[in-house]
Length: 451
Image (cartoon, one colour):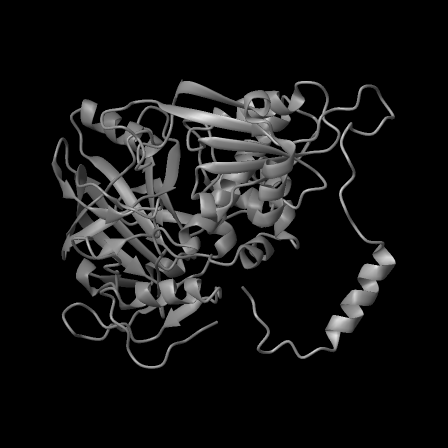
């Protein structure tokens, strides 16, 4: 954990620190004890960021010792729901404040118009069934009791919002901030509609999630009892205001949009609360959702391809690329799985790999692409599929995208029991490798070139 000395400003400086750490290749959790607000005052609420920047730490937080095995384990855990436990003693409701601008929300990037909630979990409910939904969605703090809120157009929260507005009603919404990383990962589970995330969180943490009635909406919208901060309010019917531009997970500044606003009714927090921020577009934001995507894509592709063993959504590909790994696939099985994976909205490239390739090593993936692929034979594209409209390569006004798959697995053997008709990979004996590692273990490598 890194606690920088002195005060850092919530205007760009904390985010700049995250960029510097990322460039240095280090991903410690960062706690800024005395964040300096835009008005020059020092906040009593500390900021924690980079909480989920390390894939290895996030995996351990959800009970996975090896982050490389996250996809099948995450899929199993979130697919085994545990109902939440309703409590009356909610630490998150110990303190009541009356001003959003007292929160040390960050203005991250150059073109952001102001301070944004970036790690706020927006919770709404379906007025037809009463089933709640939770998703991480941004909010621009515009004043002491008002903020914009951008629920992505295809999200379940947008469906709930529209249902309330169609009824002529304002939409109740709660934003909660901060919790154990396992709970934050549980809310990223990709569920059907309507389906609550509370039980998926329970499955991931292995016990019932403690929830409590919200102050404004009672048991119609529950909140995690052990969260850090809760913001409650209503989105008035058909009221839209400018929101953005905003630095997105794509690494680009997204355009200004018309977004709902929320009039705040209540703000509560626990004693000694920490304000959680995600570095938008940085690994800190990409890791948790990417790992959740791995679980979903694994479930989708495994249904058609029993030979699938693992899925990886690398941060370098934002949320657009996925690697699928196979052990002894049958004829057509890799293509079946790749086609199924591309049905997942965010993906636009899926690559199939053999289990001798370390898919967590970019050089290994490039080796497979260089030596196992003939483009006319092993790649295919599909037009007219749904995708992320935040992708900056999308043509203006486009509603669907073009997606691509690459089968980088070795050709199948002509019949069972026979090796693939390709030369074996070059290697040295295991004993020789062990001896080489022993030689290096005692060497002083300081000053050796790394590039």
